[in-house]
Structure formats: structure tokens, C-alpha cells
Image 1 (spheres, rainbow, N blue to C red):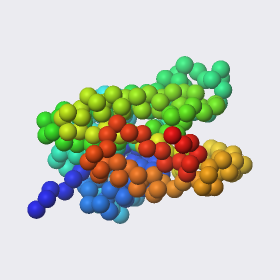
Image 2: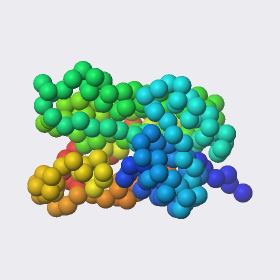
Image 3: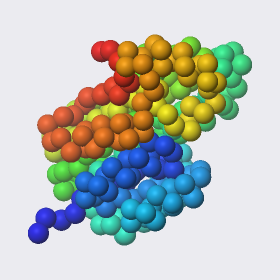
Length: 240
């Protein structure tokens, strides 16, 4: 009998994170849901799909280590890691404080580094595993008034490509998902007019759903001959 695979998802209380937890469960994975804010949102999904929720501030090295240790104790080998946690900041660069800049990079870039570094040794020993880093279409093309977010997400793409080359010989795949405008709480700060304008700029004429992003995440984790790639899920807003 084939062993069930396990996936650890950070940022699991967000819209895409919760949708990914459901999508991986449907594929038969054991799902470990990690979050820092809004743990009840994650717990509501976990209760329904039979997952476990772990709290973790991914910017702190000791908490990341504790997260993986707890997940490994509960699930055994973590076959796949989805680095989904992220924060945004909108406004003019000249209005941004150094502390706000560093906070965006701490979550969006340092957190990905810490989770990848913690996950890889076990994967290298077993000569298998998959990592999916969640970037953004603004990491592929910078957005006005989102300089820190764009820069931090571009760094994630660079890290993904470098790691894919570094650990590919060990049988480990590393890919990147770059969502466009998705109907999630992160975009709740945008006005209806701003959301409408973004939808109009999208060739498919609408925002994406968390479920559509989740389907792409499962695809990248499951396909065994894709690595080092950045897949846009953006309705054609950005074409590369």
C-alpha cells in the first residue's frame, strides 16, 4: 500500500491557503496548516477536512524549527512545502518607513528562506520532495505603489530558480506560483472601483478565485518533471 503524502502549507488562514488545504486533501494528502494571524479561519477548515493547525511566525528561526518538528512528529516525512504566507503594503515608497519595508521582506522573503532551509535536509536525505513558493505577478513585473511587495516577491522568484538548480540533482523540485488579482482578504483594502479596473484590465474580465490558484498549486507539486518555473495564474493580466 502506497504511503500517504504530506504537505505543509504556511499562510494557511488566508484565502488561497485555505483553498490549497482543501485541494490537497481532495488529492489524498495529509495537510499541516501553519498560520500566524487568524488561526480560527484555518481551524474551521481543518475541522472539516481532518487537517492539523500549527501557529508559527515564519520570520523567527526558532518558530520555524518548532513548526517543522511538530509537523514531522504528527505526520512523519513532509513530502511537500508550500510557502504561501505573505503580507502587502500599498503606498508611495517615500511614505514608507524602514520598519514597514523590513516587515514586508521579513515575511515574504526571509520566511521563505527559513522554511526552505528547514525543509531541505530531510528531502535531500530521502532524495525526493517538492517546494512551492508563492510569489505574485507583481514579482514578475513591479507595481506602482507596491515597491516593497514587488521587490520581495521578485526575490522569491530568484530564490526559487537558484534552489531548483541547487537541489535538482537530489531529486527535489522547486517551483513558484505567481497569482494575479485573486478574490482574497488581502485585496479587501482595494475599493470596488479599483477592483473593477483591475478586472477590466484582465483579458478574462474578472478576478481569479482562491480555488483556481489552489488547483495550480496542486499541479506544480504533483508534476514530477517541472522545476524552476514561475507559473502565472492571472487571467492573462501579465503574459510571459
